[in-house]
Length: 507
Image (cartoon, rainbow, N blue to C red; front, side):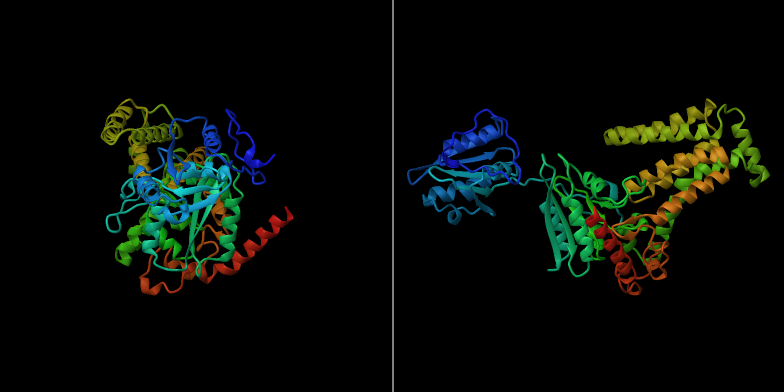
């Protein structure tokens, strides 16, 4: 029996076919219509519209929420009715037209906002672009605001995001490649890079990792990050997430790769170093010495947010002799009526701070501001008057919270706050010895961490003096010279990729 004359599958669940399977269409529009209707389980938002061209019955099917009625009328239905011909590909004015005989392609096209045009008496299916394409207006990202600089941010539409990138990089060497991930969601992913600046081995490695993703659902860039990062158990983020086109543009012009995903305004940048998380677009919109001071303040905030509570705990518990006598008396009077050791004080305050932070994020803005006032004034005052926490601990935790807020990257800020807890335990157990041991382990981990062949703690490990010009400090633009990513790292990255490819071949 021929494939096109078989009876349609009625009331059977639709299964995504494998690459080896072929779902040939039928010769009658009613059978094709029934197949598509069954594939979507008779859903009510799958619409069918019948038209007659030259006495031939035709059916246009589309998913109502994804398809623009105006675009469907202007680019498909109106031209066909005016010409009254079956030469679909020459009459229809849709931006994209595909001809297929595979019903699975029709199902996949419908889920992406395409309209499927069925003609009676032929197996040809016309898959026509009619996507609604509405998205929210371009606004400044809430988490990456700047005082001076661009105030536009990415949106949830991947094509609109690529358009913003293209407007900023008017260069034919800018390459965009598309991928699909997620067996059930079939999510569109795009990578962007400049051909003559990026390392070809880096591009090949990123493509290999994205193609190797095996998951039913890919919803956010965080899913992709977990699948392709080098060290999934590292507490530090290995890819920089941003919603700012200017920030992504700056990194792409330095030879890095940007990753976009449909349905998310966040993009991923790879490879990055530790100090990239402490750089802000505002550094380059101000004078170079102002940018340097701001960057040094942020790096100092990393040390405060990570170690300040631990230093206080170790000092009060084991090494109070290093403090001046007047300060010891003040701390002692503050701790006299507190029934808990400094570690328990710090844990109570840090956990309370995290609860207030989460509550402020989940609540609407007016109520969130009220939560901040209640948490900062009412709870803070009451907990001190109840002698549960000392005044000095309130000051230490407040400085720690402010320091963590100074980090431009939310992912890095979360990592620092989490690492503070084991450091507090080590300080409460072993004093400064435990604190130094914990900080040494973090430093060793940073020095040994690599992301896509780039040393994570560069330019300090390995030390590269020339790259200090735009990492810890920022010198004037006319002194930067060559891109740091192209100067020293090429040989080391080439060796890393050679080891990686050899390991893949052995596996």
